[in-house]
Length: 92
Length: 265
Image 1 (cartoon, each protein chain N blue to C red):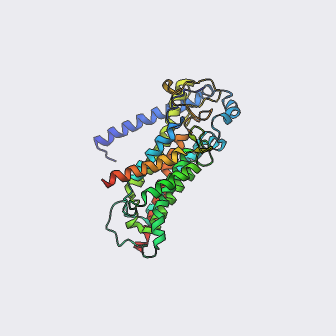
Image 2: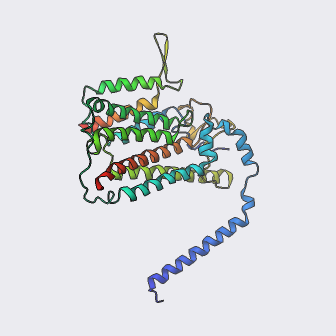
Image 3: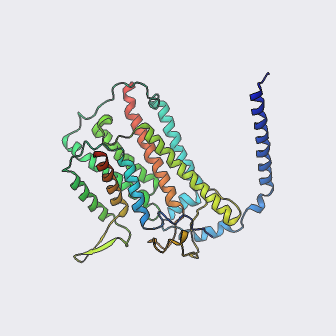
């Protein structure tokens, strides 16, 4: 029925991470980060991590911390990482 | 009417091409009955729930892929129309008048929070796009969310000082790339269905395994990179990505032109 030609990519758990970083790099390449200073970086990162935990879907990305199950939305956090990576590259 | 040699040669090539095209169309119509696999649609309806957990995505991109393709190009047409009406001369780089600044109206709190909020909105939009085949959402809502993030920062900081320095060319390229992803994914389906079934179907959902027969993925890598869901959505996520690029760039371009349009009043 099928050829299974394009299973690499979003058809596995590395797809959202990869494409999230690609999206982050593409959009981050156009960010000129004058409006954000170094004091805001950790706040935005921690906020992004909290929202990613709230949006977590896949059971593969879960850990147990103090008897609580924690999940991470890998697309969200990888996009944040891609954005910040490109901003740091542009600041050099 | 006198024609030069160059035009005559061009006319001959045109005539031969038209003849070949007509012959192929006539032949296709003649053998059309042999090209249809009987029962294909019935089986597909039966197993459609196994393609992706989100049945709306299956209907939107698989059953009605042409419809979504048309919607994508409707958006491009809307962007072109907006460009012609409001943004004339912007793409050619004519001398612009002073761009209106809105930073005077923004308060400190707005300036402080809107850029981080825009970044989080971009990330949320990407999440909606990439999870479109298993969760509520998809390319169109995700692209709209990203464009909302861009528009938020444009409204607060103004077009000149916005941190998102999208240019016209970048957005036009992104929109075109999104539409091209959709078109070329359709060609991939055409090639692979022609290879496996003998008949090519444009926008065929390549890679779907509704019968759960094939457990090994492309090049045998599926064991290493295992998919969390029991089914394979095929090319639906890539169509989502293409639509997402197209929508985010198209809506941002419309917003940018409408912001710039004030200067010519």
